[in-house]
Length: 187
Image 1: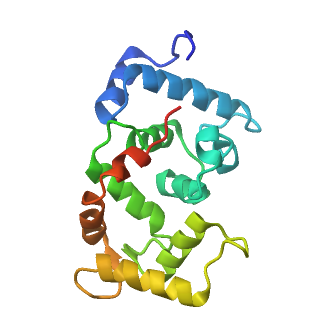
Image 2: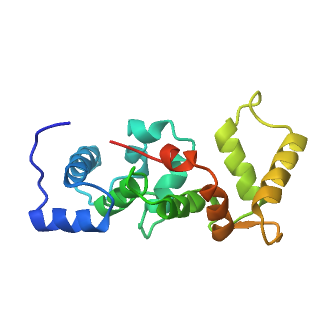
């Protein structure tokens, strides 16, 4: 993509490369894309609104797109807006080079809809609804949902406390070789 030189100083580019799983070329492309998104904002702004971030084709069809923005946003307003550093963190966590530990950590945070540090039956219900779609013809019946959540907890809840914590989630993910390859966003 593009032969446009980056506006990032070399020192900053090197620092970003050290702190992420991204190459200098990927960081330059991310900066270019972020600047394009910034141009859509009303007035000068160091952050890009969630509304504009969600126009990226890589996120547009992701059923967890809003959760992704909220998890990576450092905004005090909790509005899902992203700074350039937030944007790099997102791309880094979803890159092919990110470790299973990093990917599973962020996936857990994305799936933890109430941000309480565990996946309980309500989080799992929202997760399933995101994956299956929330239209009437795609929605599971109450009994199907209860059975599925029961199966997930039976398989994942090692300490049998009725929730899945990060350690239990990572244990399950470690047995799923397709997880790393499917958890990615490439610009």
